[in-house]
Length: 185
Image 1 (spheres, rainbow, N blue to C red):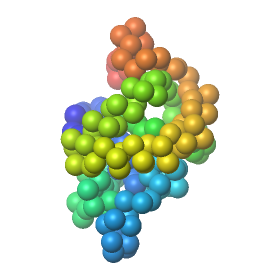
Image 2 (image 1 turned 180 degrees about the vertical axis):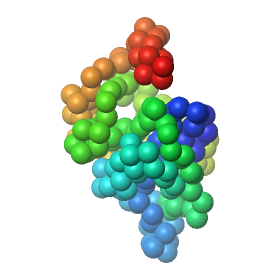
Image 3 (image 1 turned 90 degrees about the vertical axis):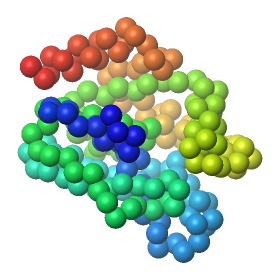
Image 4 (image 1 turned 60 degrees about the vertical axis):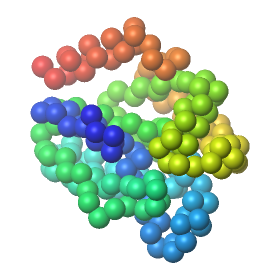
């Protein structure tokens, strides 16, 4: 699996909703771009993701954007997904907040994780991978991440067919893998 958010095999494509963050390259100042509420559904170009998923379902190929979290803009390269995928896995915390997107999914899985675990993961990621300060991560969490989670993410899990509690859950994972295996036969 690639960290960019897309993994491909002969039969499977994985598409990350994060690849569809709106390009903020038109905002000249990087500091101003960083002030955008990235945890609101409007920060994502979900309509393009819907278009891409429809094309994949119709047997067409797509070029998924590549988003730079450092510059808060899309880069010129894209990731090509070829046609003929039997399984398309879509992941992202806001994918159930758009009903048109929800209606496209055959199986809907929500991985439920405690607030403190989510915060610790974000803190580590943003400090290590994105070289942000502890203060900026905490401020963003309190001002946008946590309120948007409660407004959009928490309430969207009722769209799921399966809710996996506590993140990594071997029983749930085995059930999902068995279902996916059955679909690829």
